[in-house]
Length: 269
Length: 253
Image (cartoon, rainbow over the protein chains, first blue to last red):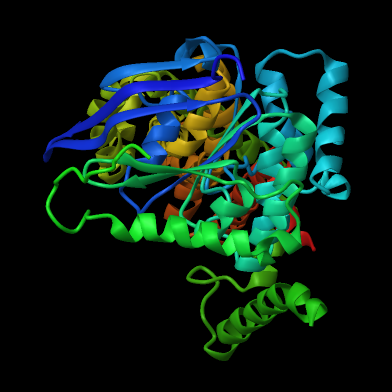
């Protein structure tokens, strides 16, 4: 497999505030290989979003090392190796759909031809060609999120960071977008780090699932997802799909977060 | 339905004028107390060359004061937004200035800037600067953390963040202030003139005709002031629509 594209070693994160220090992450070590789709799942407050932000150099770790493509996370960000999708689409209301997708190309100072061609290609990829001239408010939540995915792909990033991108959508839309996302990822060959709180979504999408527990956030277990590719509607009906869902669910249930702060045996996984 | 809504305001105006006309005649009110609308219009047609000159004189003060005050407010807000610490210190004072009756400075402005247009422009500048400053600064600094994270993830420079996020984000709030300031500017200019100014200004014309019980002349000048105020306001609204196409397509379909 070669060297991992994302590598975290002993990462801690403590947030300082007036109320005191909160330990958000403790001893996170994780390696993600190129082309992997890694889902990070856990209850709210387990630091999964902080983990994603540390990888994307939006938050600095308090301790530990983050290497991305063999360089620092900061350098990777400056090299524009990331595409980010948040839970809300974060589209600029004063820009049309096309102009929103264009934004990263403008910021990177790409030539005019590319700035005009690329959004067209990307909007076709997410099935929103005919909405290029619309403003964000004219689109449904699911469509807006597709625009934000298209924008994340604009610079052809090697890493996609997705923070519960479909969390605010209804189940039907979410399942459809899951499938679309996989198609998009196959075409772009990006490595994906995907934060979610939906077990089914994590199993359906990923090659590995990182299960986290809170107080402080740490990795409980890593579940390899050995479902066949391509993942289609029928995948959700496979016995193996249910087994994996159950495995992940149990890992989350076993979590002693409500009990004391004791470290459980068999931590690494 | 749409038709009714379109014409309703005009109908209300016509009805109001008829009511005014009716009341004046029904109670035989003397014209020096309250002239009937047709008398005002008649007076307007007789004196309009004087009124147009006075109107332009006052309107110039309002527009110049508006441009300097609002322009200065926007620029100051841009500068202040660069330093959140500085902005936090000045913002409370700028907000508090809204409750200061700046027009009370009009007599002093005459001492400082002379009895001609300068003093009136100064008052309008003061009246329009702070509201524009406050609204624009709020607009520039109320960008969501996620918008900033997004820009950061693309390694955007501070200048890019300012031009592509903060500035466009502030435009709606900026125009809320500009619309209010268009009205304020006209009020400021006319009322400042009450404290002294050349005869060829609307404020002095209103004041002197009213004190001579030339009520119909005073009213026709007030009418001109209203018309100019509306013109100013709608000019700003028009610019707003051109500046924010994304905002207005909404109501059009």
